[in-house]
Image (cartoon, rainbow, N blue to C red):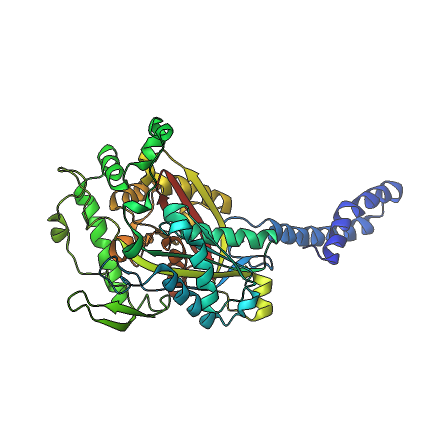
Length: 454
């Protein structure tokens, strides 16, 4: 925004020299010319400062603060637990979401009535989960004036939910909203989650390719792109190692909201109430132990249970609003949403999605790959994540510094929202600023978003 003094400065540079030039030719007063030159140099310097402020680009411009920035004031997640046997195996998706919502209200201290819209990413729930997620918001304490909807872009659903809310705030549709994600793969994962294709779709080659199982197409991609098993297992080992180390050091504690749930012991069939406070998929492995696991999708394949994402349960939520709103309400700002991208790729090359989406998001933000401090890239399969990182020339130390979905799981609709809290807290802890979240998306897509920490 230009100040009045800046408008005067513009007038001085653009208009005064004209009068001075005329006066010089009429009267040739050297003293006047000398004084005017000094003033012009001052005003030009001031204008350069204003122009720099208005046109700042790249990383310096990204970390500037403006009243209309869309910011994050609270980001959290439940623990992520093993599908079918973890702490949340008996907990419905809506109950996971209710727990995340309650924790968000408690941590943020936001008046629930100020939240105008909630978007929830989900993949497996019947009807998209729209009815049960609206009920979950009411059960968590939001008034009936808070609208709720579900969104499904498969593995990027949680991120899509956050981006949709951010864009609604940018456009003025709402002032405050929540982007969330949830999945109970224990209760809803299986053949029933996939719709049968019509004859028309089956007869269209590329359309029919949308139903090829992701493990099968990832196996073929690894073969075609020459990603061998040894490098996949090494990548997977690093994910487990980093996650185990982060868990031991308590690096997940700030982003996790513990949740009390009912749990039925599979051995005794006795139901008890437990508090789940940590990811239960994290375990100690070695490259050698991973190398002994049988390939899952082809006899001579390279992909197996140890170098692919875990089937998991979990929920996450992100509170967003404009900076001016956050400051007015006294909300502590932990990060800023900058830009996002969504792209399509051939269905059989689903795994390359981040490779195509990340450069598009960076371009929108005015960044290069080197400007980013941390990349949170979903580890759907070690093969595709590793290939994308190598093709983009990303240093491995910048990718998933606390491990990823191979180590602690990928609750489909939750992951995109979960990555936001994981990223922002790690940026804050390490004193870094710029991060990217990204993932491949089933049927052949990719999504990415740029965030900054404060």
